[in-house]
Image 1 (tube, one colour):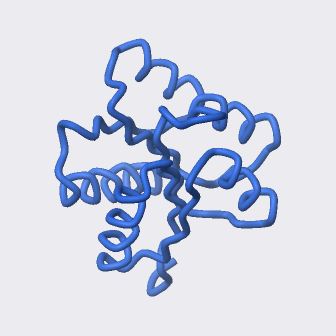
Image 2: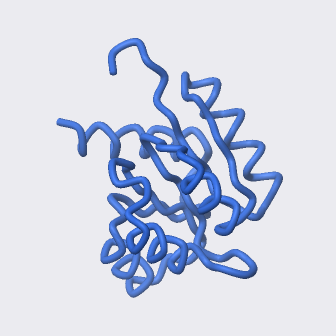
Length: 130
C-alpha cells in the first residue's frame, strides 16, 4: 500500500459537507469517491468500488446510515473497508449500534473540526492495519 493513495468513500446527503470533506481528504492524499446518499453508495459498492475507508453519515433521507451498513453486511460489500461513522447523532445507543454494524470508529460532527475528522479517520485506519 506504500505510495498508493488510500481510497475513501464519503457518504452524506449534505452536499456542502460532502464537497468540503472531499476537498479536505483529497488535499491529504486520498483518492476520494462520494455518494450523496445510502442508495448511491450501495450502487457504487455493488459496481465494484472497494474503498479502504467508508465514512458515512447516519441521518439521511430514504435509507439511513445504519440501514446502509446492514445492507453492506448482508451483501458482503466492502469487506476490507474500515468503516467510520461521522454523524451528529452522538447518543451512546447510536454509537453502540454503529459498532455492532461493523464501524471501527464513531465521530460526532459537532465535536470535531474537519482537520480533526481527517486526523481521527487516519488514526482509526492505521489502528486497523497494524
